[in-house]
Length: 303
Image (cartoon, rainbow, N blue to C red):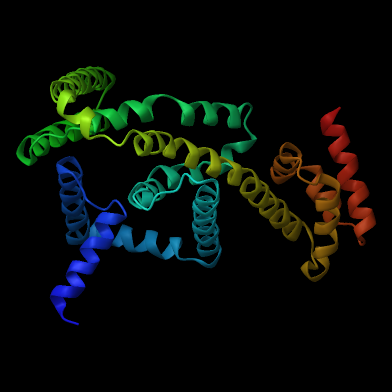
């Protein structure tokens, strides 16, 4: 067993699992590495990065990351059971997991808002994913991709540097026109090479790849509900601990609240805001009394 053999095996595995970046992805990776190098080199940003890493590796957040990863693995297992999984989707799953998936996971605290699930599901199922797939079928050469992505990056972050509303309006218009022109260029280039592309496309795999981000998003949306309940109860329990002088017996009040509120997320979030419920429940001495107090407040809020 030599280094060449190991290298060939690793490359073969990466290709079989979809890790074969096109020019567009290579340029994006180069820009990402460049940005990471700048962050590490700059003293202020490096300090902020280390602080963020320290927070992200806390006990509770590590548990959240573990749940997140296991949930993604479970999705892959389910997809394999129903016959739509392909090892080539490994790269797509990984990229989604460290980008869109984390964004969706971070928004679980908004699940109490009206029509949250409906709005998120509509956003996930939207046709933007399909458009993005077709626009990525035919990337440009690396030099053109580099210029294109740098221009797009500047246009996107331009409004953030505006010092007043007039500059912000100008920057927004520049961004819109830049994105429109760049999209038109990409579409025209894709259509020009369509006669070559269509014959080489595996349509069955292509359909799965198009809907894959949507399926992942809907699957992750299921997880946001129990996470929202857990986070809301954490706030309720914290308020109960603050209101009690003897926190060693606070578990009785907490069990009573859970029995009274169950998975009624709206009621839990109301209790987490503070007010009478947390105070009254905290000053009970039994599970039954805590249950009755929490139930009374819940019924008052619902009426």
